[in-house]
Image (cartoon, rainbow over all chains, first blue to last red):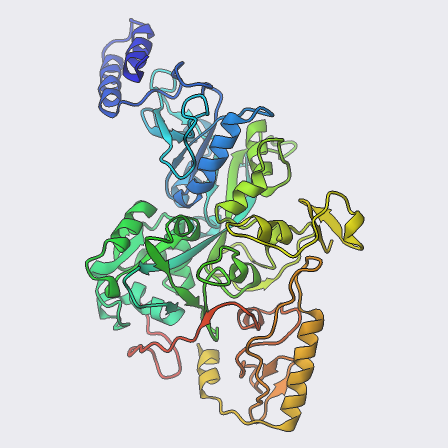
Length: 430
Length: 116
């Protein structure tokens, strides 16, 4: 049945006693839905249904991972668990999840959510394609649909120093890299923190050639993790002092940089996960932090995806993602088992027979803490220090990034690992 | 920024003691600088200098530091860097760029003017 017809049928099933404002809401919703030709998220035609899906609100840099995770979970025979999501700024997500009133931790009625089509719906779909979308049915969720997990794509301290409510928990997620991008036609290869300070802090009067025209400096809104982390990396504080044209989404920055009419003067801000999906369109600059001798990319070379420099401290613009979810105030564990499942999958704490969560995380440009050799206090641009995971996964990481390889010994038991340990099918030192 | 400025200003001279210390540092890196992974590639020192500035001394792990603690060589050859500036400047085989941007408004000591 055509989605519109299904929606109209659903609406007709709604109680007829609605009147006045409710009638207006009904008509508004119907018109909006017809205009977008999208189903409601509770539409019976969606197979498998999304009625018990995990609802995620996330920074848009996490979307590549969410698309693939959403697809794998929807199609999983081991534990089918649909995931629907929307993207917005990290500070907006934190504000939503930190609301003292649990009924206010919602995505608004009539908002559009994204999800991966199941194999039944679209067997040809892969995570590089746009996701399916549905609308939060205002007749089912008149006050909005509750958010199960908010994914902040940088430290909460960049948005608020307040602790979360007692019934909300913070669960550290994988590391997200950020960087400065230029058009393919630009000859620029690097940016120093000092240059960045003048380009993004002083704009037209900064005289940091060639980026001397704010019309070609593309940034993000001050609530976005990309702006928060990168402004901190070049010392432009607070983030509201960023100069240039701020965009809501990564895609707008990508398009503006890629299609710039003056490539040499153009520079933009971007999450590394987004850049990794678009290396054919723009170039990421090597970055030299304050006090650093050379400039480095997140990866060991322009063509690799190994995040070697991000992992060992040579590349500093990165932040830890934070999974924010309602918790059981006694056990402090996520209140929803599906929220716990998502966190465990992303961190590699659990693996389903047909969902390799850690593999998804790694393949989409994120770095699990177990693959890091440095860490920092939970604040953007905080100094780095050495880090040794008690359960390292560096071998798995190296093997599973795009074009990845490792010289580590493959294993299924600790047997071949000597004094080391077999983790994620590779011998690690501990 | 002052550290960066001192890096650029500091003169270099080569002495036999520096060469010896550099070689020892290189040996230390090869011996101890590795991944947590078993049989993972050991990082090679792509930029270790044997030069030592006047008044400079090796730090306690073989990195080359000036009297004010500034880095005076291309990279820090500690086998297991932990301090921030050591991590930033640790020797690596990764692709790297040596930028020399022209920033007219940067203060002579490397300081930055306040933002408007």
